[in-house]
Image 1 (cartoon, helix red, strand yellow):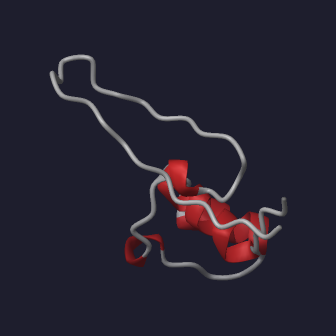
Image 2 (cartoon, helix red, strand yellow):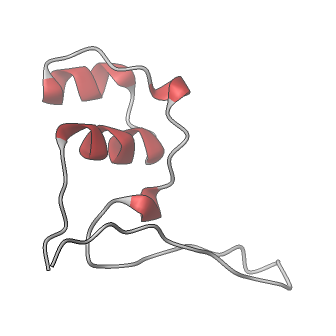
Length: 70
């Protein structure tokens, strides 16, 4: 299975884990706008899954998005 990732996927991930636009620009050497990217860290197209739940919540659920080529 191939999990296809591009630069935008990594930028979305960095934005979702609260990297600053300045820090991302230092890594990618391009200007990005994190405020326009509504991504969740769990949606990075990798074959692993991770999430954090608020332990005070009584009803917990999550979902992940993956795109795979066989």
